[in-house]
Amino acid sequence: MNEIRKYLFDNQDLKYRDFQSNLTPDLKKESFIGVRTPVLRAYAKELVKERKAQEFISALPHDYFEENQLHAFIISLEKSFDKCIAEVESFLPFVDNWATCDQLRPKCFSKNKEALLPYIYKWIESEKTYTVRFGVGMLMCHFLDKDFNEKYLKTVSKIRSEEYYIKMMVAWYFATALAKQYEKTLPFIENRALDKWTHNKAIQKAVESYRITDEQKASLKTLKRRD
Image (cartoon, rainbow, N blue to C red; front, side, top):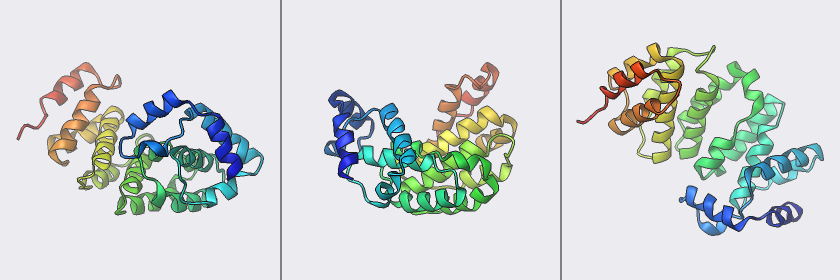
């Protein structure tokens, strides 16, 4: 642990620390070291290759944002689905910000989608903000293309929360769904299946997407809620 923390401070960039802290206002500024993402990704690969990662990811909770980021990158490299799921389940309760949540993208999940689904449903029902956000993110990443099913839209549309980072992820999910599965997703917007804020945010993000046609954008704009 001391060796890893020394490496992080040796690669500290104070200007980047301030920048990253501003992007993640829910965390205290002193919890940031200031290490750039490419450096953390490369170090994660090095630790895995040298078999130094396991002790680090077993030492929870971490003290610094970058340690959580490094943890997420290490888990994302795990090739065994069963081991990866166990590590994700152990880590999720300690994820305390949107950036770490969204950087946790295990590569092995794409080859184990059927086994992944029950965990996604469980995560979405969690009482923890970033566990829910992660679950919706996994549906967005893995189940909007050839493995798409309209029932996933229904599942996400039923999520109700006052947590900003959950509402934003639901909006992001529906904006992406509009880009990839427009005809199937549009009725959820037309029928106002989402709360007002999330509904309008989903439309805003969809309209900003280059994957949405100008005709679709014009139509979506007429569906914004003002009531």
